[in-house]
Image (cartoon, rainbow, N blue to C red; front, side, top):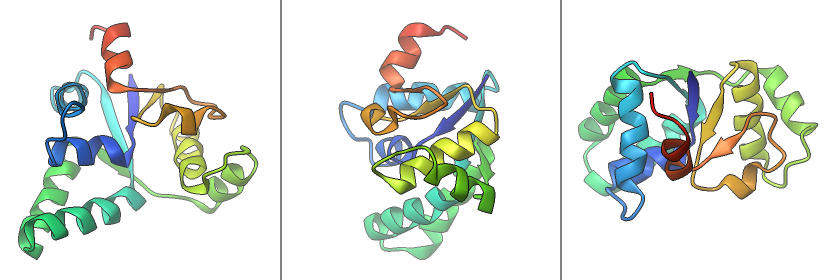
Length: 138
């Protein structure tokens, strides 16, 4: 099973945000334990870097965190075709539309996000970590 992690899930884990941390981390652990293939859009990497750099005020720590993430999930580039496909999905948020287009191209089974309502028009189902864990035992 292939799952695309939305940026908010990774940030929830890195910041230990309650009440989201526990189940977000459980889903990420599926990728760590190779029970699922985890992917993330490369554009999320810059957002994650920016937020971790603000949190730790140390460039090396922020970069080390990025490299740790890349050991767990595969980064996936945004292609020009993803941008065109995203424009045709009818999303209100273009960034989310691009994530959905990447998930479709990569044949992801699910997008893991806290903001499922933002992905209501996604061709790839978007589920919360809680719902994912309730539906699947891998």
